[in-house]
Image 1 (spheres, rainbow, N blue to C red):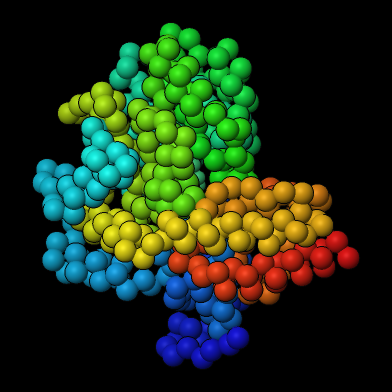
Image 2: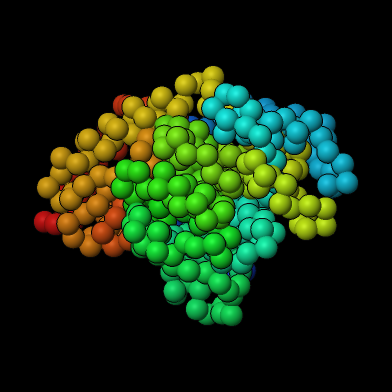
Length: 404
Ligand code: PLP
């Protein structure tokens, strides 16, 4: 589908923008796949007028889709009223969002704890990492396959050697164990461990779900040794899995929870939440940020929470996610579908995920090849059953073509 855009910027071609991008932006991401100009609901449009169903949602960020009126209104009103204050001051949305997050973590009743706001997921993890150091212990146990961010602290906790090695030495005393393996955790955690850090579902690894009872075991083991249980919900939180937080289904109460991505629905914000005594680990002078807790970002967070509640998006994520998994599981190239809610992994029998993702883009679908064998979908939680069903049909066709 093509559309004409007004304005000089959009009259230039994709090739021109690609050239300007290559000339002026650091080459950290490789060439952009498309030059996007606008979005509405679950759709985005490129500079050439092509429309795409966004099944990746800015990598699990655009929970309300694009240009959601409530988010636009909240951000517009806040930036026109009070756009930024330093952390010498506070603002209503900052306090209100902290209270809402604690209430969501308490399952309706406010959990005892404290929030530190950041502007990204990696920074939320930096704050939590620093909090773990305030226990007087330094060792952090992390999982193979984990992704926690690219700043030096979060990078030290991330699994992929290719991401870490060019930047060593990184903060040390990090112990890696197999993900989902309770015995490995038992063996690794002793009274010298400050924290065990886990994703409830590994997103960047391609939507890898641990066995039933894993988080419960991690809670038991950490409690036995006086270590913190730190759950990274940066990708899985804020309704993505059909619960406010993916760990909620396990009934476990962690000590530290980090969130970002979906929290602002596209406005950069993250949070490190310390529950119980962990909320007191960071004290005056221990940490800081200029933008964390910014009124516009926190107003966006409140609008996201309100819309997820008022539009029944947790339920929608469950229903539409289950439907997508069921539709795609039927294809002979699909070994299994993984994940919960609208965090969907499609595990393929052959390493053709990158080729399928490229073909999908040409067919008007944004999907992600997390690994050669795994496609990942993290669409807006407003995705309808009808949109999902159309997308599943297109994807099935592309999977068939990939093996033809
Ligand atoms: N933690 C997890 C589980 C993530 O998936 C990500 C990003 O993909 C991060 C941390 C880092 O977040 P950000 O890219 O906002 O720094």
